[in-house]
Image (spheres, rainbow, N blue to C red):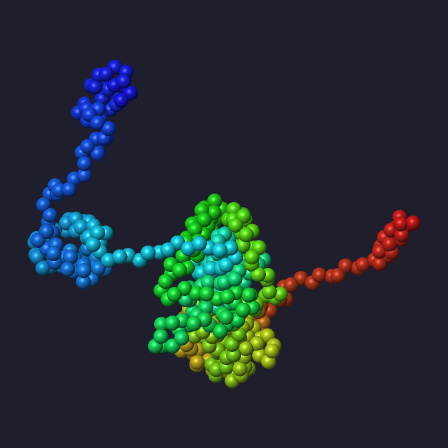
Length: 486
């Protein structure tokens, strides 16, 4: 139009505008654009390949709206051999998509909710294995217990090994103590850490007693989503993805995914959350004004149960086996189950702690607990169910294999068990050092050779004379200080 106003030549105006002369003439003929002049097409440009079977397809979709186009297409190919080729699947998918949009059943509507300040905290677990975190070079598979305030998006995160009650208590308690205040409600999904099925005949789930006690102590009102309705916990689900994407980016900037300990990794994780929370301070301040105060004391972050020690000198905790000292066989012990460890008490006195096993049908057997009986019954070693746990390191395993090559099975078993007994009575590190030395010298690591090496090592320790201290030097020092003070 500008070009036409300059010189009135339609050919030159069309050329400079980059369009065809006929298109330019349509613009000049009226106010409508070329697309409006062209109008919408209501006819097909090619034959409908599915016209003959479309009535049947609609009947199938009416009867089962969730049927996928690929399933229907495979049915048509079976019923009409040779009529339909694989390349026609996309055409059918477009036709069925159009049918669902115009004639299909109504879809579920999700209603966006307005959150109120200080009303709730949502907690959920998210798998963090894709972050490929390592601890001292060892792969670290773990979960992140993630707590979020939906109104301000303030967040807290802790490292977890499983979706257990102890890790949930630790995660939500850590969050409120970091926050300094307590929201009205605490919402989770229907994980077994917070809920359990009311009865086998019902789908309804109710809160666990221990979880209710934890919420009551912290000042929360417990809430949960409907069974199978993850969208009701939608804020935390979205926040989980945002958190992991952010952590991935910051790990790339960091240049390493390795941490010296789980504690240092969790500290880095919290610092990352703190950086993100700085941009949420305005809405967070609104929440803090209407939240409740913290409880006067922290909640114990463990479950406590009672277990009886079996004749095999083991206890079973959450379907996993742990060894205890054989002197406790037949007795009942109290076990504190933390997220990462268990502690065993008898008569109120601490006995030992060990790493917690996650999963089922696993075992943690400490040779020190049972070695006295095994030395007296060496024949039990060959087919002991947990025999692999009796090799504290690869070097002990190499020692046993070497003994098996030079002795018969019973003699090798007895010799190895004596090595374990020596490690239990003295020092595992010193026995392992002797084994390594003997194996490097291609010497059989028998109990006699190991003891001889340990005696040689002990006798070679140099004696250091204690220096003679002249107390007069101290008197002179004190006298000089008194003189300076005066």
